[in-house]
Each structure stands twice: as C-alpha cells, then as structure tokens.
Image 1 (cartoon, helix red, strand yellow):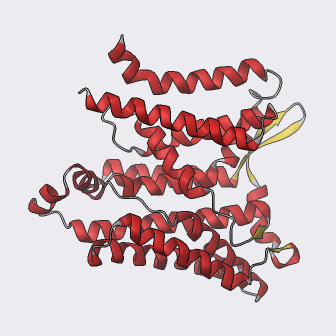
Image 2 (tube, rainbow, N blue to C red):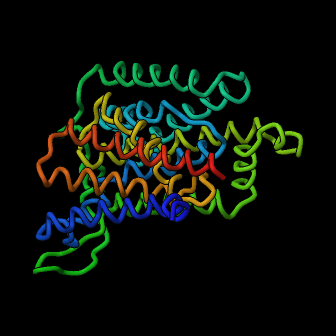
Image 3 (cartoon, rainbow, N blue to C red):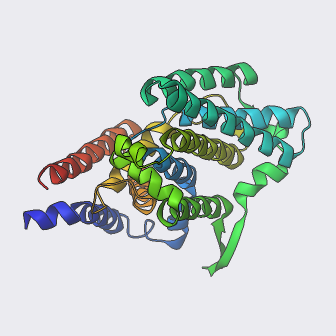
Length: 320
C-alpha cells in the first residue's frame, strides 16, 4: 500500500484537486470554455517550463528566464514604437533571447561558473536592460500593432457551444507545439539521451565521449529562447509590455518541473510530466480564483502543494 501511494500519489493528488473544484464549482469549472481558458492562461508557463526541462534533465537550472521574458517583450514593444514590422520585431526579440541563452551557456559551460551564480547574475542584467530599454514604463495602446496583439485573441475554431463559437487560442497551439518539439528532442533523439546521461553522471558521460560542455551550452540557449517566446506571448495577450511582466515565471516554471518529477517512475524531469505539473498549477489558480480566495492565500497553498509533492518524491527515491 505504501509503495503504491508513493508511486501514484502525485496522480491521485491531481485528480483530487480537479474533483474538488468540479464539485464546488459545478456550473463554471467544468465548462468547455473555462477549460480552454485554463489552457490559454498557462500557455506561457508551459513554454517556459517545457524549455526549462531541457536544462533540468542535466541537473542544472536557469534563474533568468523570467527576466528574459520581460526583456523580450519590451524589446519587441520598443521596436514597434520605432515602426518595425511585426515579423522583424518578433525575430529581433527572439534573437535577444538566443543571445542571452548563449551568454548563460558560455558562463556555465566554458567558464565554469555555477548555474545558480551565473543565471542569478544574468537575471539582474536582463532585468536592468528591460528597465533601461523601456525607460521603466509600460508600453501599450497604439504602440502595439493589431497584427501582434490580435494573435492572442484568435485561434482554431472548434464549433459552437450554446450559440457561441468555441475557439482553441493561438497561444495554446503555440504552447502545444513547443511541448511537442521538446518531447521529440528529449525522448526521440540522441541529443536528448545525451542530456539525460549528463544528468545521471556528468563525469561518466564525459569519459564516455559525450561533449558535455557543448551540450550544456546549447541547452541554456534553448531555454532562454523559450523564455523569450513566452515573453512575446504574454505581451501579445495583454497588448502591452513592461520590464516586470515575466517576474513570476521562473519560480512557477521550476515548480512545474518538480511537480512533474513526482509523476515519473524514475523521478527524472520529463516534458509531458512537466506539462501535467503546469496544468495542476493552472487548475489550482483558476479554481481558487473562482472561489474568490485571496491571491496571497493561493500562493501559500501552491507552495505547500509543491513542498508536499517534492517531499514525497524525495522520500520515494531515498527508499529505493
């Protein structure tokens, strides 16, 4: 019984959370419109968490993803103000993300700085750059082109429900595409298998001929690129950009990966499990918001759930 609880405790907890809100909010929570709304709400987190999984399979992490998301959104918005076409501004913002990731990867892989120290430093750099570029203000209104902000409002039509068109948002589609891409990279390619080998034993991987330095370098670039994309998605959704817009993404993304790890048999980061962790956090936030629970109380509850799930996972690994 104890072994079964350790193995399936995470799944049971997810089902319990879902059932709780379904029973207490029968008229709103289980509606198709609300469930689709949850997928849109968590789409940015899903992108960051999925790409964060790439570095976490190696035992690393990136503290700068939230600041990079803010920076990318601000860069795109400032370029819009200067009259840049949407495709060029978006490409420039993604390039900023890639460059930031290459800096992180270089400092960690080639210089040898601990990921915590390196990405903590770049967090402050990216955040400061976002304030400098935006002059500390929010960019919105006519400065944001309709072609950009309208992307988040559109999507794939699924049909009509109660006379209203039901649409799967573009942001959800982007998140699904990113998760699918990360799954292919990690689970179906030699690149992904090498990353897991590095996470299992870095020195053994190096002795086996795996280019540890190069792979860590590329993984950080991939994660920062995902953060930049999430920043653009956020800016499109709210039709504005400010230098603190992505501040909450980093901790929540790491939490989603850890929650996902409690669902895997080997306790390793897996992107589909990460997606499940993202949905747990999204369902929890959506349900508590509908129940009008104070935001600070929601933060405490999310923290307790994360501590519990990670603690159960750690105990499970220790007793094997």
